[in-house]
Image (cartoon, rainbow over all chains, first blue to last red):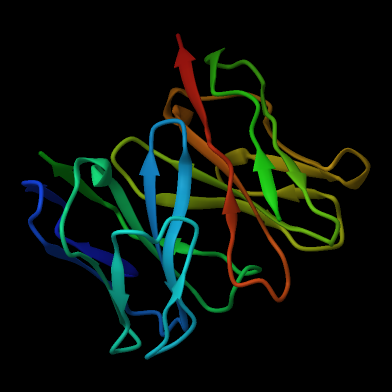
Length: 113
Length: 113
């Protein structure tokens, strides 16, 4: 039981490049979330999903897209990376929304030059 | 909109001393409250949570928190800190029927010998 895993752990991009971050969970959770963590800002919700095939915008969705084609996977895409997207990205999942524990992955550190 | 305030950005405590981290939430409905801990380079781990019932909640690693509705607070406490408690601590609030958790900006805890 691996919990929540994220790939890759670290990535360096040049401005304008694209990439996809992968999140996988093996707990059969319906709800999945992508956050970004920046110094002094805490965790801010980018996008989330309430089930396979669904996605919704969070607090800071601009510049990101997501897909949830399989229940266990939640992908976060950057189509044209910008230096402002330099951050640590965390994926989380939960059994039900808002009132249940969210389980976090180890994070992906992204540097955009 | 729901919000969480952690007024202390950084706290330094001597090993063996007691600890209290502050958290205030802002919303009218009955909140579901969480404390998470993030060790350096790691994801977030749940320390404890409050849904209803006894307002004093026990968590892992010897932590406890008390829900005070009159003060809209959910402060985290530990009677005697250990060097391994050095980490960043996040308070979060959720509500039944709301799909999202809202996180505070975090409090970084430093332990000195």
